[in-house]
Amino acid sequence: MPSLFRFLTVVAVLGGIVYGAIFALANFVNPKPREMTVTIPADRFLKR
Image (cartoon, rainbow, N blue to C red; front, side, top):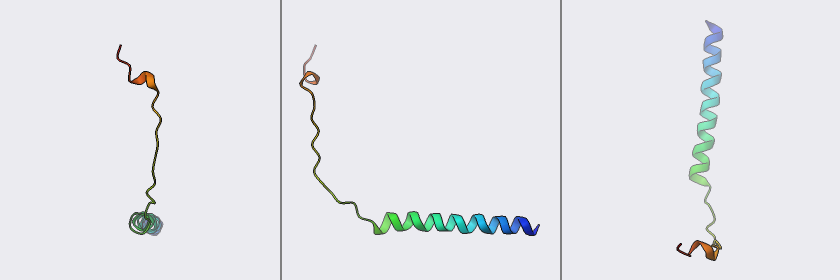
């Protein structure tokens, strides 16, 4: 039984670290907006 508790503790700690990393990325990292240009070929506009 102690090995089960040790396993569950390790899984819980790793899950907490992953959750904390995702939370930190979601709240403290701001994306930089930038312009984007997409060239569309002219044959896309031709109706057949």
